[in-house]
Image (cartoon, rainbow, N blue to C red; front, side):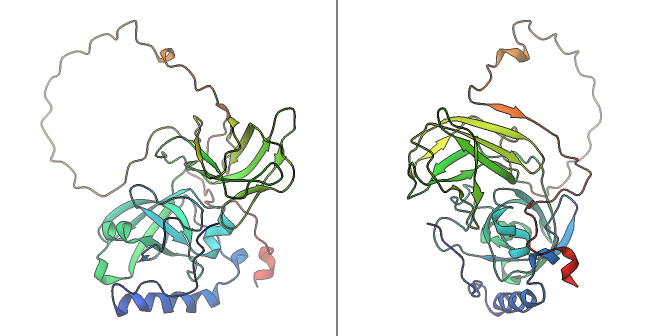
Length: 309
């Protein structure tokens, strides 16, 4: 159903320094193997290190296709948090600048603070020959997505087994529920490979799919048909806008201020109400506290923190 990552070093292309990263990562994993003892990344800035890898296939453990810009990251067990972080975005700063990456994959051997980037992303912030670079990173609440949210029924879905992959949601999703005609909403469970499943009879649809992100915003996509392995693009979004890559750029030279003509009054025929609302959008929103410590992965730890010693 999805390409699961293997517990093996994957940085062979850049020589011994990179191979060492795989060995070091496995060693540190033994010291930080309990996800309940490791805080997931948040909107606060964190320090760590980055390596890179080449993807074997076209999708990561989050069960989505490779981003068009090839800028993605694999997180270790503690920060991947059972797929809860999938689809969210992280700004990563390295020696050469900054890049925004999508959480797309898991890295079982990576401890907290070790981000495994795509080669494309790594080269934007560091020298490929170095293999391992120091970084700082933070999550991006409401990061613009490359397009509207999409829903795909995975292979094997039927009226008795409801299973979807969701992409382009930008914020991590906390919960998903769905209902068919005349039915009531049933909660779906998120699997480690980022597929939401309702194991029971749901009918042939079409369905309404209700999704709530970790900031409390809820959107509902309607008229989702039971079409296995066919991506259905909705018109609902958790965040507005389109994605752009974030890179450090030199500041432009200051120019002397010059007088500018007074702006013309806007035409009365152009108003903000001229755009028709999307027909399938139902949304209630609670804005995130940008200054707060907002968790990237909202999954509850499997073991209480008190047991971490």
